[in-house]
Length: 105
Image: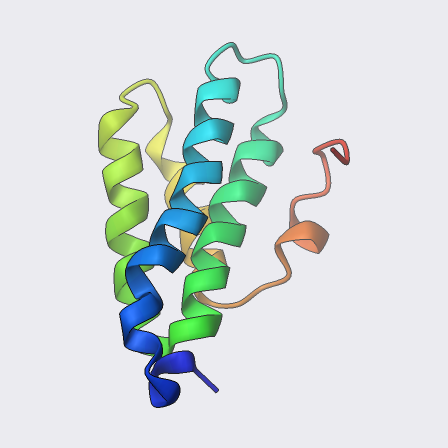
C-alpha cells in the first residue's frame, strides 16, 4: 500500500529529502574510503527502498532520479555497485540483511 491514496503525493518532496540527505552524508563520509563500500550500498538501498515502499511506482521513479543525481555529483563513485544497491532497494529487498559488511552505527 502506498501513501498516495491519502494525499501523500504532497509529502513526496519531503520524503525525497528525508531519504537523500542521509544518503549524501553517507557518500561524503565514504569519500575518505575508511568505511566499507557495504555501508554506502546499504544507505543507497535503504533510501530507494523507503521511497519505493511508501509511494509505489511513483516513489521508484523519484528514487531512481535521486540516486542518479547523487551519483552524477560524486564522480569518484564506482557506479556499478551504487546502481545495483539502488535497484535492490527499489525491488524492496531487506537492505540490512543484504549489506552485512557495514558495522552497526
